[in-house]
Image 1: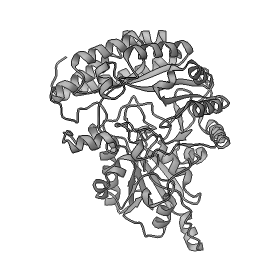
Image 2: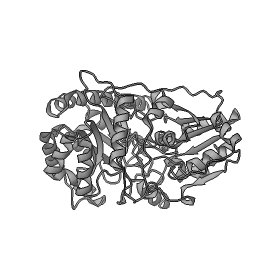
Image 3: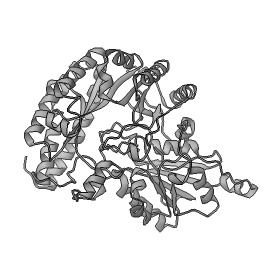
Length: 489
């Protein structure tokens, strides 16, 4: 079972998170079968990896599980356990089926949970981004494996489970392709998850679109969600947003509007479709954050429409401020540090926060380059900057290339949080490189940088609370790393 965004970027996208189970209507018609379903108890689990970042922009629920709950027939009894919210898992519960979804960073923990349930005689089904691309590995920990998107196979899984004929593998390629976005049932999600109402400092996840026609080497979307670009029906989307407000949002003095996290892989593939989406959001009276393409931010009218529609922040993959590195990523002909600086400033003046995502590559970037990046972030008051060591996640073109060349040195999935060096480096020893990375990341959240960030950027309270959360998390990572490797400060 898979999560929100199919971009396997653990630090950025905790929605991070599309289902790997499906929606056909093979309903068992017998009276006895229907009665069995009324007593069929389903537990859906979102595990938390041991090294998962506490500073993630954690949405209110895991999107993979949210979709599964929404497409499960109403006669099934569903319970959600999400370890990101410290939910306790009841291993002695009377569950008929336990479903676990995971990203790569969560995989080891997912297997651990699955093994404990199977020891107690429970049937376990595993799915998600990681499992979909590592089915042989996952098979040892489950009664059944699901590969790919969920919508067109999930009811078949449930029917087979209810009829005691669960198959060892369900592959989305054996079912019709997913061409629509399943509406989220926020009422049922709230009941199953036991999540209460939140203020505007925590986000409610939602999809406006799914799929992306582009192929970035470090993104899993082309091989999972696919290139087919799908959009929600406007009226159905409005209904979902209004229901989510009623179920999850409480107005406070600081937050008069709810904050939605758009979990789209690519909100707009062209300006026309993007503007249509922004016009729809404008009428919903919400605030939101979204992943976004750099090229759209060069258009002042698009930036204005983003702000007018309630966008508080956009996450942009800048990758690097070093021109030679951008060229290595095939972006040097369109991007540069000077362009980033200009776009950040223009968006800031328009009332939009730009969250920059930067890749650190041991084959391309030196220790001095990390120092230069910290200075760039400070000089330009970049909102909530994210540093990541380049990591080849299973399911990406990069993973295939690195595997073929024998460049992956560590398959401990707990380390796939973009803060560990898991690939071969001809220039740096892993411990020294990771220490420099964490030290640089921490400097980007110095008190001076935080103060300037809050002073210069729009939505000062948002800047403050996010910066403090990031600083605390990075400090804990750095302290732990230095302690484990006996590094003196």
